[in-house]
Image 1 (tube, rainbow, N blue to C red):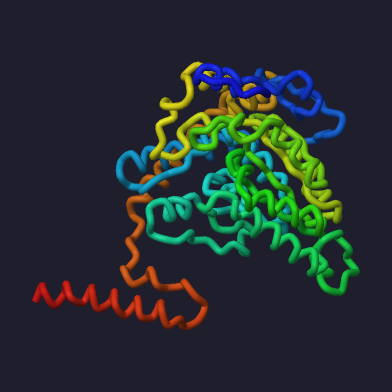
Image 2: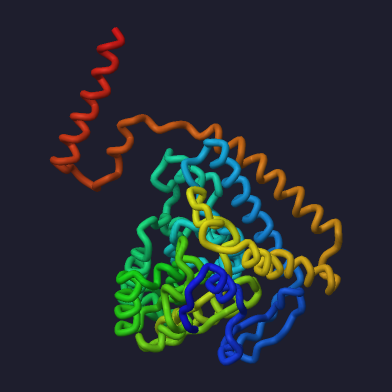
Length: 391
């Protein structure tokens, strides 16, 4: 891919399918038109109920996203990072995980959070500013959202090296250290822009040389905030893995079935001790980077329209309807469920209580800290001053 100047050229380049010389490495099982195809390396045997379940996930997660955007516009949330267009990458990969696998997300993995059983209201708490991320990572096997770009990949690699040393890799039931753990692995999510961060490249080095049980899942949504992919790399992102010594592949990130299949295979390889894999989910961010962003300033409307034709939800709906695996009543039922979920989220968001001011000092350190204690005492005195003035 060559770098050319001009917004029009950038937009035209980034909305293209992978070049012909890479087509063989672009894994796709469901075309944008909803046609089911096979891939020799990724056979997939899912029931009609399984695919209907994925469709339900896609629709409900998009509804969560739409409601959160509306709540932010109404002043109920401070900010929101949309996943619009990336639902298939997240639902497909999220549903491929086993209960023991650990997830390290960015701040946009609302679909994966849904798959791990996180109540979406908990996500709203964070963006409303009333909690620091109110779920227990170990309970859901889903770590807290990470705002610092790319740092979660180092955390994930360290965790993967830890479970490796705990004997939880390989699925050996006779392992005296962890006989009850039938093989575990880690998945770390990040975007295309994060691949330019030192943390991500350092994580690749450690994961490779220590053969860590981790899958790096890059959602290449074409825009690192406002910078196109060609400003991040001169080669396809998945090919970078080769330089670090582990396999990489590119999958159609708008194809929920392909994302499921490649993640399932890569995670199983990691659990068996075969080491890391880099998955590049070739997708597109159809909305703004966050609700503070204006994408019309750096990309063309025609680019967005081209990607609308590859909508991850519509292709599954088309497949289910065309194959007779779902009828109109099913689709109506899902829409009703989505509307009910939206109603619940709006009400729950507005009812979230504000934390007491002093709560910001809780859970910072596990024990006493002189500097923090002094700050707490000073702020408490400051607040008391208002009560004295009101008397």
